[in-house]
Length: 91
Image (cartoon, rainbow, N blue to C red):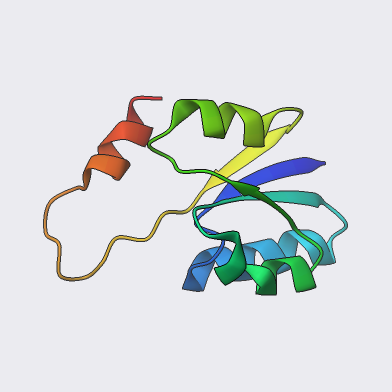
């Protein structure tokens, strides 16, 4: 199965990516800065540069995917949802 992952560079997301790859799934990670996500490539994931606030980049990254794992991080110092979180909820 081809699965898109947002938040793959985070603590939980990275483990989800490794779990999916270990089970033979094709994984595409939407990342803002590919140079900082090379560990995902080492695990066999494909990187798609984009942002969850940019619908066109999400559409391009998710093309052909059969599933999406949306695993954004929320910094502990924030008590209210971020614009990114509320934007994805509306998708």
